[in-house]
Length: 114
Image 1 (cartoon, rainbow, N blue to C red):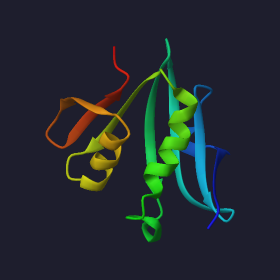
Image 2: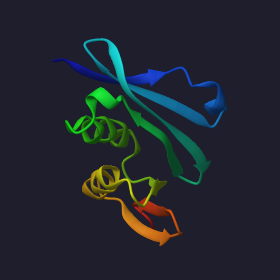
Image 3: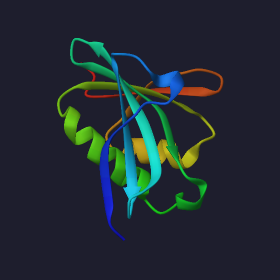
Image 4: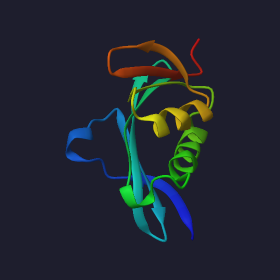
């Protein structure tokens, strides 16, 4: 299998001049996507991370996000994730995100927080 990561057109709800959407492709078929929102001051919000159900549990999300995050080295990146989404939480922690706050259903995480 050949995988590639590249900028893609945003979905309708993700359009905005401060947003950049990325796709992860397996043999030219889109299998994952996400959007980075630029907050300015070298901080970003990772949002709408989705992996096709048929491709979950294979480590693709980790590889996809590593590819994306390589473009944001040294930048502060925030995200929120459902508490009960154990695979996503493990993936984010493995990528260097740390919990900074917790709500009833959501964990707020950050990478390179100052």
